Image (cartoon, rainbow, N blue to C red; front, side, top):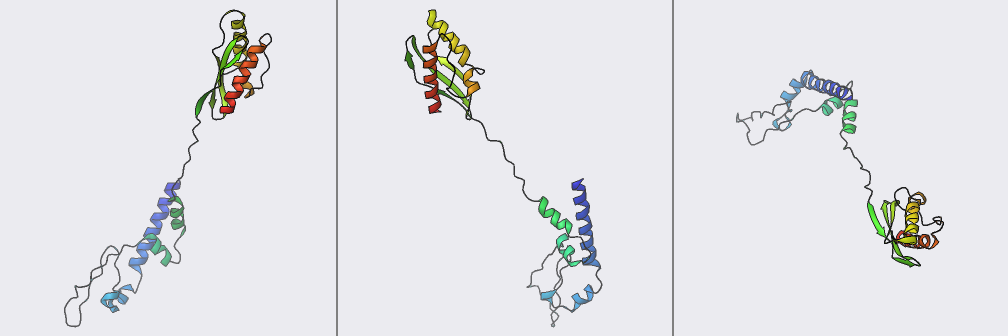
Length: 195
């Protein structure tokens, strides 16, 4: 609808300019009284050289072609609408678009922490500045130590673990796995410090 309005307004302004330029009474008489240097511009045509007093046509002067514009016609006509010129200026402005900043995903691994039952380290995955995943690496797998490691992994690690929920190393200690919990938190804190 907006384009149709602009097209109709532009057509009206252009038609008004043509009528004003072609149909104004007295312009042809004024054109005959002017010398060659001041010959009027004919819309869509060229200025024609006039004869010099000796009867020789002056061809040294180049002909000038002038095309009328809706803006020129609109400014000469008192009743013409100038809103079409203003509207065109505002719609011709370039559109700027901004894209959302890309969120970078990176992985940070904490140092290996040795404790009473072995050693472990924690790897976290961050999306932007937010922890989205955590996991313990190198944790003991056999015997009581393996059971403790499984309990710690189940509580802290994964995308739905306590590390992701709290977004820090301030985790509650897993009952029966105090040494493993403490080592996990130490490696996690070092990884957060690196990130």
